[in-house]
Amino acid sequence: MAPPFSPDRLVEILRAEGVRVVEYGSWRTRNRNHKGSFGPINGVMIHHTVSSGTDASVRLCYDGYASLPGPLCHGVIAKDGTVYLISAGRANHAGAGDDEVLRAVVAERELPAPNDRAADGNVHFYGFEAINLGNGRDPWPEAQLDAIERASAAICRAYGWTAASVIGHKEWTSQKVDPRGFSMTTMRERIDRRLGAKPEQPKPTPPPAPRYEPFPGAGWFRRNPRSLIVTAMGRRLVAEGCSAYRSGPGPQWTEADRRSYARWQQRLGYRGADADGWPGQKSWAALKVPKV
Image (tube, rainbow, N blue to C red; front, side, top):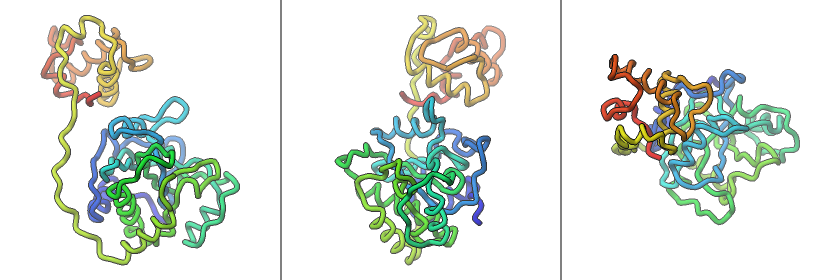
């Protein structure tokens, strides 16, 4: 029985396999562990996002949505092969699947066709969501397929598994069709070939430049704007533990936004009129609101 990797170890093994890794948001502590266990780990599951665009897809998998809260996987694999880590714990990616499939993965033998939903895959699998519309026409660039191969091989190598421990979501449950557009059999062959060779040393790559919203100006907020920038700001305030929200945050600037921002200003050491909740350029830069 394999315990989950620590966040540091997960980054280490991926980079050792030559994966280009971006650590996204508060991924090290973002998880669904309060809903159940994560581990023992028995395999890797590959998905497609049914979305397009890196920023939107990563944010979707990080946040989730009303009926399925995030994180929705452990890593999002972009078209250019970059892997965005969004969780190191339990994630809402696999759901219920066939317990016979789970036993086959553990034994590293041929997979049966899934026909029941008796096992909780969120306990047993690392999950990677690859950005693709999943319509059978959206292309799979080689850089993206290479990253799926490398990320899967990294986990298999660290646990001492073969590629038989890597499955697609559609092989876990008949309720799903992902990943659509490439063969999991061929992908496992690629992974096995990689596991037979010494891992390549990762090439040093400069970290991507962070994309943050520029300060829209103090007067902009006093006009009570309705904007996705306000939502993004509110999410950052919540992440920093400065929430005064009863619901939301949402796109409409409200008194709850101002009170939350005042807490952020106080966190930065501002007092009196300098902590009145109206954003200023220095406090805004320190908040690092993601570009929307």
